[in-house]
Length: 112
Length: 113
Image (cartoon, rainbow over all chains, first blue to last red; front, side, top):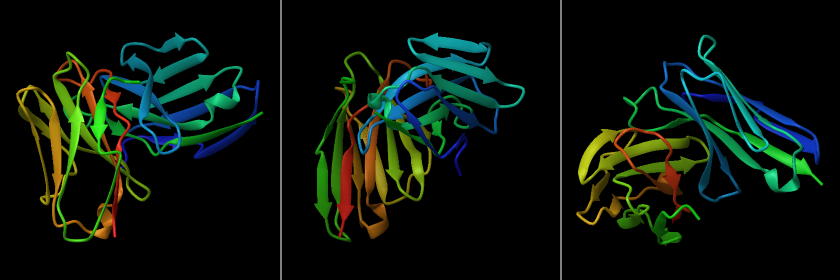
């Protein structure tokens, strides 16, 4: 079963709007990462947040982490059509920090 | 471009056959991870090697095996293929033994007919 569950499963917005995706996980973690996947292609690492961090920014991306609720959110501001992709959260808690366990992903569609 | 290369990009084969997928990690990365992505199971971790040694196993079937060679490239061998093995197989690499940022290759799309 998946460690993380993303919410929503699919999201459709207009260019310029903000997109928020949420991820919940089950076990304790050392870090949580977000990845992007364009259709049928490899995953691209977006951002890593460690368990002792609460918020992190990278360009138009903002990630928050609440370890008490075992949840994280990814905010993409001022979205662009090129942001259309699937977004996955990944945690390291279930494999002794040796591999990532991925959520089911959020499919984001940004309409031009 | 992540710096991780995988060959071949596409593979079409028949049930019962055996195939080998190849991965070259980023320069300097010692860990290689294999993942399987299918529509029904999502992204699943298969196995990890670090500097030639197996470090962690996930949901890898007994029909599947992997190894990492002295030059750090890795191969994933899939045998007695079944229709359900059709999936995208990704290789990822990282510098260390533990899972900080992993860099993913473009994947090999396996179709079993």
